[in-house]
Image 1 (tube, rainbow, N blue to C red):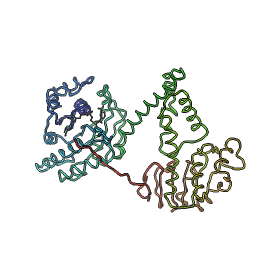
Image 2: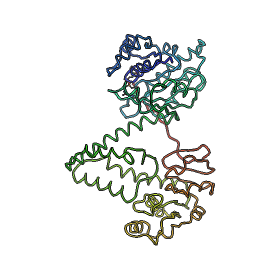
Image 3: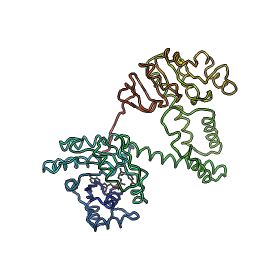
Image 4: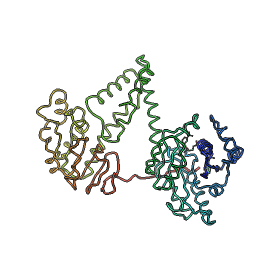
Length: 464
Ligand SMILES: NC(=O)c1ccc[n+]([C@@H]2O[C@H](COP(=O)([O-])OP(=O)(O)OC[C@H]3O[C@@H](n4cnc5c(N)ncnc54)[C@H](O)[C@@H]3O)[C@@H](O)[C@H]2O)c1
């Protein structure tokens, strides 16, 4: 394939050399004349293991050249990567000026190509830089504005984030955790599958905004892992415990610790263990005079999720609320620290009519700490809770689904028109003639009239 790469910095240089190694013909484009000269001499613009040899080989095979002129890059290629820098502004916003400048240049170059009669295919522009969701669309708009060309016909914009790490970038390029392409174009997917066919990683083609979001989620999680490990280490040091042994064993648990478990956006945690044990570790750190801001903030974040549930229910503007599931988990009657109990307590305090369905909770049979907990929160629970699901659904305008009990699956079909507040993503997709609102996710089907708020995209930038 003939590929142009806009930006010959770290990622651009590695990308150019590695794409050439995969057999593609690459033209680098950069405003920096020195970098362009280096590439034209078969030399890398960065220092990194293995890159010099790859550049030399690409140069000798005639697979790599560079230019400062965008139109030259576009004239020779059918796919263009944007790999310019996306630094932070002093206020912490993402500065997308370089991206938009390149988009403008690509647009003007495509216009010239079209006028010459050479654009008889759909040019693919791939954003490889790390950019926030919405940038792909904006880049497409800029290209259309500058070229007068139609997205989806003359060109399209693909999101293809880069996962390499400096220091091991060549190795990472050929062995990424996965190859991610965000596009709405079947043609683009086909081209990218072909381009990366020799890279042995799962190829995932997904929604554009999902692809744009991934890099931020990944990197924030990586940062979280580092500070979590450090905070655990600091507590261990205070107790003269070998923190490395602790974290080594922690990482051996591939069922609950290093696994997809618990990673589904949804409702707050609760139950008899997590809240109690979190509190104990936090207090232990406090007693040791060890600062653990991340561990401390977990509790607050969990409380916020309960508040978010209360707000979502109140926003429906109805007084009769049906709560489907009261215990902290499906299939149990354990009410201790069940987060929905706090939500119900708040709503009762505000005068809402609450009807609760939980087939496992028999008020007269509750004993011990389970009974003590619920009686302190909702003393007259027996007036609100029943094991008759239909009765709760009939009496309520809003149904709040709090766990993944199988009985709840048919509620949408049986009670069309009820407002659903789903705290746990009971349904993967909803074909529902009513109002469906997911606590931490938006519309999951176009047929649904959701009440989620639209995301306010704000491209704040700093002038340079
Ligand atoms: N460095 C990493 O390890 C890494 C890893 C993954 C993703 N990323 C992301 O990739 C992107 C690029 O990062 P980088 O480290 O390669 O940046 P970099 O600063 O090393 O390189 C950016 C290049 O873009 C060039 N440039 C600027 N304006 C241009 C224009 N109008 N036309 C052509 N070239 C232009 C610059 O001269 C420079 O050579 C960023 O969004 C970054 O967040 C970086």
